[in-house]
Length: 458
Image 1 (tube, rainbow, N blue to C red):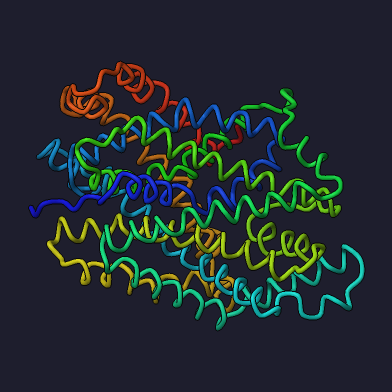
Image 2 (cartoon, one colour):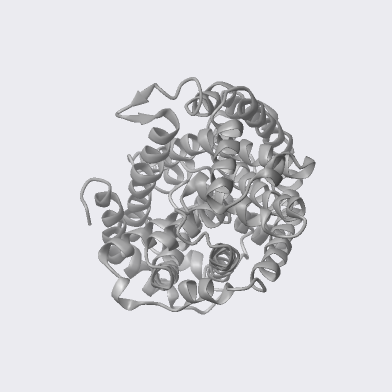
């Protein structure tokens, strides 16, 4: 096997890994989950789940990747040859590729809204609208025009596929690392700028109270399951991303420190999104809106921006932020399968990138059209988009995470976790003892709760 490429710098390593974790799960999913699960109560449980479970599972994936120095399948084949554990890696590749097919569509929607924000088309005709209900209907119609049709979202999806190819053909250092070094600081700057606006709005304090003052009576088993699911989704656990990226880590990388920084940055983005969303919606009387998925991003937030001076400016900033999150997510998810093609099938970088991304011209198109002309076609009662979303995120990701925990905790070569977390004894640390206990006993049990929640009401 050819020598594995490394990230060229520690800051590049961290920015790339943060970019893989910070994505639509933080910007899109977190506010919706927070609103639906008691506000600050959910935030508190989410932080606890990230620290107590998310970081140990992340360290398990980091250890696998750097020890195996290969793709998500290859690490298991190198560490435990002639066993069936490579199937865990294969499931992670399948999950990540299915997620990529519909993530590319969402990225395309974001591109459409960014273009419409820049040229002012998003707010055309709003001047004749009066009242919150009318404005809500106006932006819902805009969403139908931009998303629930065939041509526009399809072209935007193809545009995002082309952008991803343009980044990924350059490889780890010149493509992924350079992209992350530029876009991650941009993301945080935009987040802070939007926070400065929303936190000074009249009535912002009511939204902050909902987000920051917990009502402990709202902490239920259902909230715990939702917070666990958000933790694993927002940290990109179970997708093979962290295994793949950590294979590019130099041998002296401090895995514990890296996992702490990545988790902290992920939490910070989620909290900043809370500071943006909840003060804004309470200030403009939109707190009773359902902050779910596309409704939050493409209806409620445009209503917020319409109430601000220079709405096109703030809308443009937000959709640049969302596009950054979507692009870094898509790039990292695609890298899982590209690395597999390079390592297992001995493909060159350009060929592997094209083999992985060109089929999305058809597959992502099916997801996009499931909101348009294919909306009547269902699989087990779900549209193509919703079926892939549910199957990959709610079934495959928990299965992969359980498999990783069981393997690293019980079946990996003796001392693997200790050696990787101490850099083969060059760092003094006993954290591996606690991490191993968590991934042996606590993490599989808690992840199983996420999996079971899809079939029973917890």
